[in-house]
Length: 557
Image 1 (cartoon, one colour):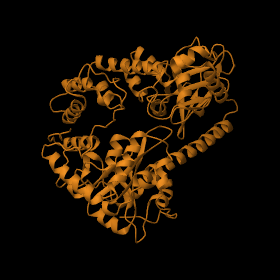
Image 2: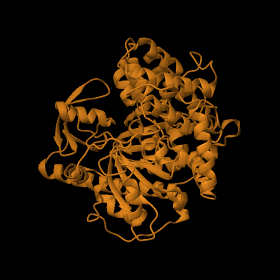
Image 3: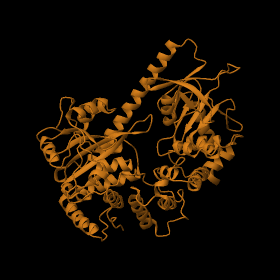
C-alpha cells in the first residue's frame, strides 16, 4: 500500500554537495567514501560481498565484511533471524497505519522529505521510506517499479524492519546504533535482500533527544543513487532544524498563555518537555523528571525536594516555594554530557557553545574560587598557552552569557544559580541515588575534548558511576549501564551481569555475543582491567532485542 495523497512538493534530485552541509565527521566521512566506492562497480562489489558472506556464515573470516556489519549479523543471529527465509512481521493494517501516521511527530514533514528524497517518475530507481522509532514502516514514496519489488520482500507499510525482526538492514541498524549507515547487497543478513542497497539516518527530537523515527532510501543496488547516504543525512538535518523552529514557536505560545492566565509570575515556573525553564528559575531537569511530574503532580528537584506541578499541554507549570526576598537570581544550566553539541541555558534561553567555550565553562563550574587568565591558558592550551588568547575568548563568553562570568579572577557570578548535568550526576552518585544518576547520565563529559583537565574530569565521572554500578546488588543497574554508550563495551560489567542472570534469561545469548565481540576487538584480556572509560574511542550503543532463539555468533577478524 502506498498512500500518495498526503505527498506533495517538487522533486529536487540528487545534489552531491549535500553530504557536506553537516560539517566534518570522521565516521560519516568514512561511510561516504565506502558508499562512493561501492557504486563505482556495484556488480563487482556485490560479487565480492556474496563470497565473503558465505565464508563468514560458514565459520571463516573475510576482511571484506566490516566490523560494524559483523556485529549486526551477530546481534541478528542471536535474536533468531534465519538468513535463508526470514520475513518481517506485519503488525498493522491500513486503518491502523493511517492512525499511526496522523499521530506521528514526523507527519508534518513528510511532504518536504518527499520533495527532497523521493522520485516517483517513470525513471525513478528508489523509494523513500519513513519508519517509526521501533523500525515499523509508516510511509513509502517513490518509483512504482521499486515499490512492487519491495512488496515481494514485505518491505511494506505496517511491517517491522528492526534488526531483531528481519536481520541486518539500514533501518534496523539506525535504530540500534543511533547513526546514519548504509547496507549494500550481501551486507544484509537475509539472502533475499542481497539485490538491494539501503541508506538510513535516525531522526531525533532536539528537545528530549529521543528517537522519533528513521529516514531511509532503498532500491536495487544496480540502479541506486550514489548520494543516497548524504541525502538521508541531509533530510534528517532538515527535520531536526524544523523541529527546533517549531519548538521555539511552541515555547512562545506557552509563555504567552501562562502570562495571560497569571497576573503575578513570581511564584511559578514553566518547564518545557525537555526540562528547560521558560519562566521562573529552576535548575535544569531531565525529560524523565518532567514526564514523571506530569504523571504524579510532584516535581523532584536534584537536591531531593519536591514542588507541586500541573501539566499544561506538553509543558509543566510548577509552583515555586515562597521566599523572603523577591530579588531575582539569574540561572545558568550547562548540558555537556553525551555526543550532542554542548549548550547552555541562560534564564531558559538556549545558547549554542563552541567546544572551547564549553571547556572553559566546565573548568569554571568545577573551580568555584575562579581561575586567572594564566591558569586558564595553562589548563586549556598547556605550556604554550597565552593569556591574551584566553582573554579574547572570555570576552566573547561574557557577551553571549549576559554577564554571568566575572573577571580578576574569572569565575561564575556568585549570585548565579548554576546547574550542570555532569555536576548533577556527581551529586546523585554521592547521595547514593544510583537510579537517578543513570537516568541523568547521557554520555561522557565533552567526549570530543582533548584538554587534559577535561579528560580527567570525564574519566572521574565515568569511573565513579561505573564503580557504583559494579558495586550495587542485583541486575537492574547493570542492565541500565550496559544500555548506555559508555557501558555498552564494558566487559567486566557484562560478565558480572551474566553471572547474576538466571540460565533461562532471554538476554544471555545476546550479552555473550557482545562479550565475544569485545574479546575479538581488544583481545581476550579485555576483562576486569579495562574500565568503561579506558581509551578514547566512542562505543556503539545497542538496545537489547527480544531474543527468540540462539545461534552461533558470526566470527570476526
